[in-house]
Image (cartoon, rainbow, N blue to C red; front, side, top):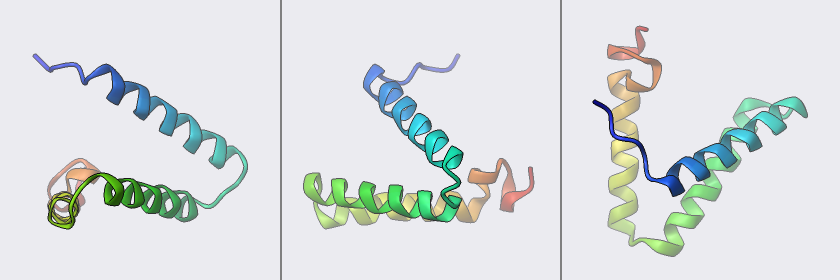
Length: 78
């Protein structure tokens, strides 16, 4: 049984999904969209967390990329 995410996380995710959908519809390149979202996310984290906490989040993100988790399997094999 999978737990439902908190309501505020679902709302935030939905808003971000809609923003991405809108920008894709405006033919904004995916790398530009992702870069803007990442930059905004890091700026928000910098206002709310210490450097070590941000580094921990980034290390988790790197581990997810390296393990293939973001692509659905080990080393990106989906």
